[in-house]
Amino acid sequence: MSAVTDHEKAQRATMEARDALSALLTLVDAGDRGVLGADLAAAEAEVTIAARLEAGALARMQQEQAAEEEAAQARAIDALMAAYQSTSNELSSAIETALSSLSDFLNAAANHLMTTRTGLSTARLVGGAVPGYGHLQTPAPEKVIEAVIELAYKIIGMSPTSSFPHLTIEPITSFLPVGSSVR
Image (cartoon, rainbow, N blue to C red; front, side, top):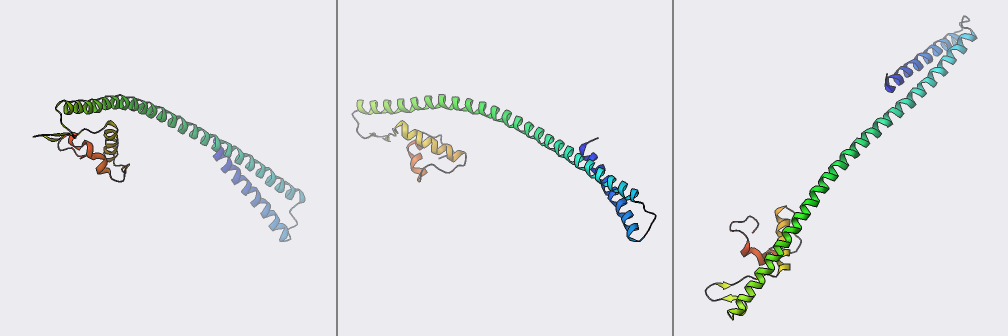
């Protein structure tokens, strides 16, 4: 039997004992001499015992409820920690992938900058303007990173990191795929 059921039964027993005592007192107040002092003492003792049993049942019910809440919290903490560990592993893997990609990305940006500058120097062209081709874009790697971060924020719908995101992105717009939604 559960502590809740025990408590409910104890409450009913206490109420019945109080009702019985109240009925005897009503008879005494009405002048009924058939009610003995022993009857009143027994009824009062029943009320006292029932109240103590009710208090004990209430304490057991509260302990049971506290244990259930503790067990539920322990299960919730276990679930939290399992999810945290899983997403932590996922985040670690994503960071590792991002760092590897970022390294490749920075190497490509630096290589593009150096190759273009070397070519411009070899062709004795100043300022990046190539006759018949226009101005060649040679953004510095740090500007490329700023632009990619801005685009990443745009892709995931977060607020831009700069006051003028279109200006931050401009150095790499010519390198974005044609028809790209992030332009």
